Image (tube, rainbow, N blue to C red; front, top):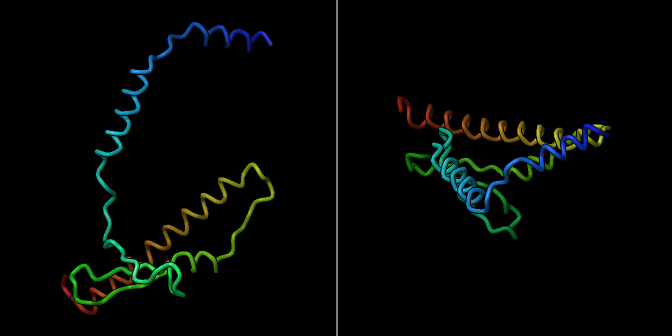
Length: 128
């Protein structure tokens, strides 16, 4: 119990930043995050060719970056719904398990789209 009181006393003596200092720190962190270069990728910006009420709603279309008319369609929501989600018995590990599974799905999604685009380039645009 003495340790808790000692910690509270130490915390009470520590200087507290002003509101301006806190805002300056938040603004500096925001500027730093904005100045970071984007992650390099070969993925073009996807399009959403179908409205959400359509049976194919949620489908993302990745067009050929060279504009030849080819595209790769994928519905990440439908693919995720078909996967089996494994939940741990320990509720304290639930968030970490769900996060890890989402990260694996994201890597697999990206790899699938990149593979489709690479195969298209090999067939339709050799040497590019």
